[in-house]
Image (cartoon, rainbow, N blue to C red; front, side, top):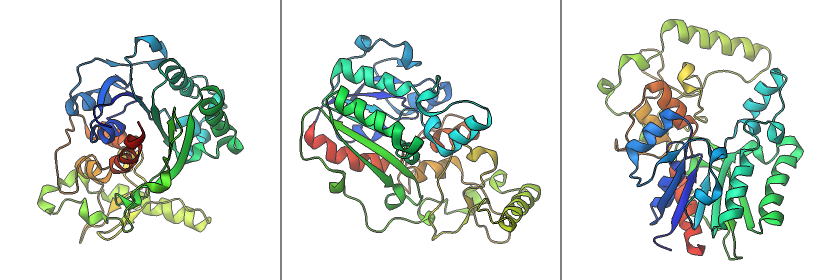
Length: 322
């Protein structure tokens, strides 16, 4: 279907939008509360509408009619890291979390009001198993029993599309029953390697991305200490032919999950431009995605985003049934 209308909720820097625009979709409403993400979003997408912040304060009737709803609703209450942090602070998590855990229900109320032909939701892999499956059960039953949609879900590892292990759950729903299946996605059999997204000319890599002796020694000692205890904590060191760990929103802190080997010197962090390629916002040999924010904000934004080629593969299959 060409010319369909969609809304982009919890938009981040537009990863879901980027996927669906590729197949003729028109974004008619955007919601994102982080001002830095909004800056990047506005630098990369044409919009004839304002970007709304807090979705909990938006009345569903004020959102334009649309065919598809896209939402990467906040994942912290459902992520392993988020649960650990909240437990350490004595706070509840999942749907008991008053600040973020209930944002799914804002997605549900908008679906209920507008009855779009389809939706695509994205979250961390752990959403499926959180609270012994009870969290996902509530989500699934809300979408099927309460809202009347046929729902499909699948955990997809982006490693077939980009040189990064990144498992995320995608939830696709349709108002009318059809033949959609995640099993029909076109997934490359042999994924790319890091060398395809890395800067080819060392002279174009500023020295600030190379780890200082102090930080590099700290990371090595930290890893050695945990190895002695039988733990798996430590840095990830990768070469041209490797596939990286998951890029996280904390990458700006020390870059430890994805360090790139360098000949004759300490390893380095990825540059934001390389992160854009690692997440599929840029093709492997391109520099087209606008990055108008600081390195710190860019790392947070890419680490919180979706892998665009994965979304494109899903959109390619979904648009047949919209």
